[in-house]
Length: 291
Image (cartoon, rainbow, N blue to C red; front, side):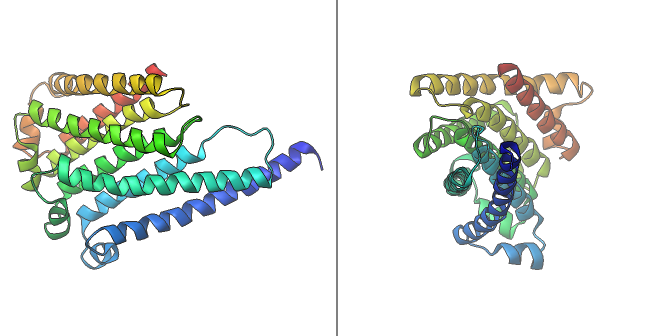
């Protein structure tokens, strides 16, 4: 058997193994989420048709997927054999499990420090507040992207993953305060009063922040000084640019109306989606330019 043919066969085994591992980890993620939340996911989704929780869980599972991809994308191997397959599967599983725990921690951080003026669990489970679900969706995605960036590349490890996750959460918390300051309405009040548009706009902006922070944390780990400097520059840049983007969007895309009015008064989910998509689009372009 030729070397290239053997390589292709072993690569196929690795790909199949990774796919099976992904489904196993998704099941573990669901079980872990059930254990760490005071409600039954199956009951809420199937018996109570809780759309707010469904939105939040969509963000959770997407975030797990991003973490899995980040952990899976390692250096290319010149030779793929059983040892390499075993190493890749164990390494991927290890980092995804760590990321899974951190992701569940991000939900607690979101509840206590981002949407801190009310109980996220009450809003999602009792009130079925889709706006709160949208913010949790954005928080999960942002955290998942940060973790995915942290586990991607060479030179780091579990410690660097945890530290950059913590720094990313601090950036999300700081930005949430900035976002609340630059909007003429109280984000918490609007979301608590079931304003889905406010939750969609805020959640989408969190995703945009996560995209930039993922770019700052991904790649090889060279030194604490170099990687932390890059992270700080990107976090500062996005905290300055996103409010600017919001202002420009208001003036250029919907010049005949006010974005703040559309969200707080009209509760216009369409306008909120446009704000979220614009923020994510600019964040993606910034990452492409920076790389």
